[in-house]
Amino acid sequence: METSTTPARHALTTPQKWTIASTSAGFALENMDVMFLSFALSSITADLHLSGTQAGLIASVTNLGMLAGGLLFGLLADRFGRVKVFSYTVFIFALATAAMAFAHSLTAVYVFRFLAGVGAGGEYGVGITLIAESFDHDKIGKMTSLAAIGGQLGAVLAAIAAALIIPTLGWQALFVFGLVPVGLTYFIRRHLHESAEFLSARQRPNRQPIRLGALFRTPRLAYQTVALMVMVVVQIAGYFGLMNWLPSIMQQKLGLSVSGSSVWMIATILGMSLGMMTFGSILDYFGPRRAFGLFLFAAALAVFGITLAVNQVTLLLAGAVLGFFSNGMFGGYGAVISRLYPTEIRSTANNLIVNVGRAVGGFSSVVIGFLMDHYSLLVVMGFLSLLYVFSLVVMLTIPALRHLGKLNETV
Image (cartoon, rainbow, N blue to C red):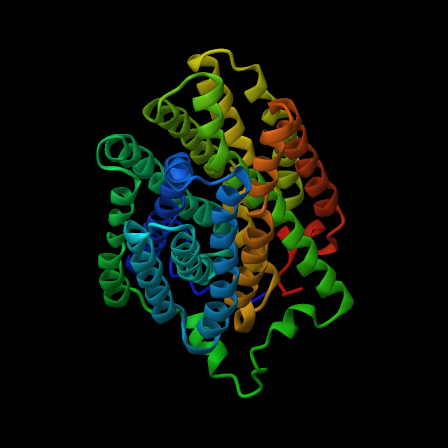
């Protein structure tokens, strides 16, 4: 693998600080948008008289938009540059989120959520690639996890905003705050610059055309790409399934208000943030197999903690533990993908793999909606637990992960 052009190994340089700040802010605002839907879902369902399946499809449509945006903007970022494309993606999902304030039918909701997904899906892989090309390899796990924590801060902001706005002004007013990320695009274009690694790769005389087929060039590479997709499918299925539906579940099962379920979400998000920093350090030090193995196994057990909650205190504890293990892994996928794929196709690899995971895993909202309509909470948690076990088995079959910590060349 190519060596990152990092001037200092310990102190962050000014470009590195701007890279982390901008990507963290972008992820925060993107996740704020996603969580707006989570907190507004029960209100949208009641206002538009939706079934559980129709409501679950809103998140799934968003994830399909993420897949489309990820494919488009990943290829554009590898061809024309990460910084310019990153700013465009932020602008798109900001405007589409704000447009939800004018959605008064299910069709309008689907359209605006798809467009928001297009922007958000393009943003992730480009931002992760910017980080991967700005830091040494033994720091990428920690830095991508740090940026992912920015996403959790966005979820906290969404929880606070939902608790204050929905009861008084309604769910449409909540989405007006989607315009906030527009200002971020100014700072991105002013302070971020293309990495030396990307500029060097673009000048190579023997540079290969940028195509999706490069991710499936050999049978081993094709299996690696598909296996990573499967792992991200499980990651997203657990995350969106839990975060989209558990607030509604808790409102029904424990009689919590919107503000009460927001407190639970904040506890879960704090657990996620601690898990991300822990996972990033474990990943950088011990490698992906041990890091993912530990967290996937623990997540398979932790989902059952929710079924033991009998009051708000035990619910907060169970949510924090579940968040720590189930979503602590999220930043690690970008770090691993960035190590396994070359500069020329890195943004495309990150966006394709993660957004296929989002598109497929997002249907967990529909599945959980169906399970909620027909079965108990224990069955829902059992379904999620089996998914984490399956992801663990798939992870152990990826050959390149066995020696990734020792690799100096791209697989």
